[in-house]
Length: 116
Image (cartoon, rainbow, N blue to C red):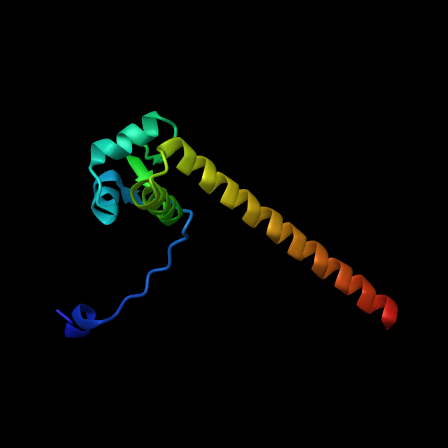
């Protein structure tokens, strides 16, 4: 067997939106029980994708959202529903900020074209 294969560093690129993590891995990553994740799903707080075999799959984005939600709940004392609302509002603000930035860029391009 080639020793270089065993010692090589491999770089794997995965979209942060692609659901690839099983519920057991996610539970370990964020330090909660799998049943808690199932409960969050039942309450509609999270919506994991499903594999062909109906296995729950989570993306990096969903895991990060769960971490943020747990921070709001555990460190700030916010209830679960309020935490979801806060995160949804953050996402809307980010989206609106991106739209505003795009509009500013378009305005600047138009002004530059008129000045030239």
